Amino acid sequence: MDSGTFKLGLKVGDDIVPVEGSIFSLNEGVATVTVRLPDGISVGSLLQYEACIEDSTMLAPFVNNFSVAIKSEASVNGGGSQPRKPKDPSSNGEDVSAPSGITIPKPHRVKASGYDAIGFTKESALKVVADDQIDAVTGKPATRYDFYVNVDNIHLETYQKSNGKTSEKVSIAETKFCVGLMLLGMAMLNDSMRHSPEHGSDLKDDPSEDIYSAIESVSRGFAPFLLPMIDALGGDAVAELEEALAESEES
Image (tube, rainbow, N blue to C red; front, top):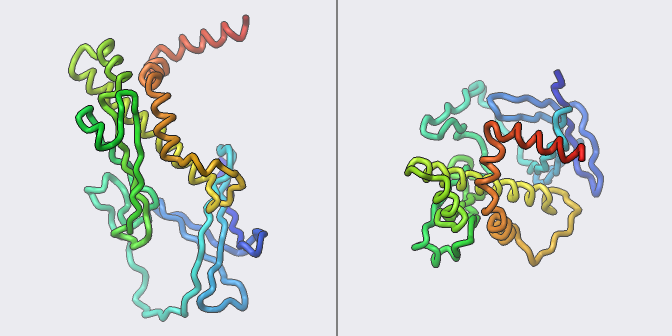
């Protein structure tokens, strides 16, 4: 079994210098890195590190850039270690003591009567709005993303009329539509953050096109295909698709 590798580097100028002797531990989903500070470091300095995790199952390494601000030496009171804060039963299994950069998206289902407030049309599908705030638990900056889904979308209604013969099927179709669009939006947000200059990307994206406009545009174009695609990839339809692909390769 491949347990993967962990590498830590310190940014010095334009170079990343490997840090020797770092200790990496993982406990209940929280990673801790212990490292010896460079010689000659002074209070008030800011060190920039790059952590890289890689194993044979990953298409690309997971890279996390973080900074460490040097403070005065802390006094040890000898009280011993404290147990980790237990999980809040109302947090759906999330560890409330863990830092959060992106909170779990909450879908806001927008009907035709609310189009003007959100700027939707019948063909609109998804709009993501960012809300920068301070995390109540960690006290650190965190971004909350609100996902607005058009549940009166013309393509969703067309699908429901042809496939939703009961109220239950209509509701299921709407849920699939919401979840599929939120996953699309989350994937685009994640890709945008991974390739941002703050994460060391050399990509020069067109500044006139922000990620939120792109999500609206892509989701609008994807909406007609979303539910038929989910149906096509579920159940026995997968076998039929494999047969069709095999026939196309032979011809």
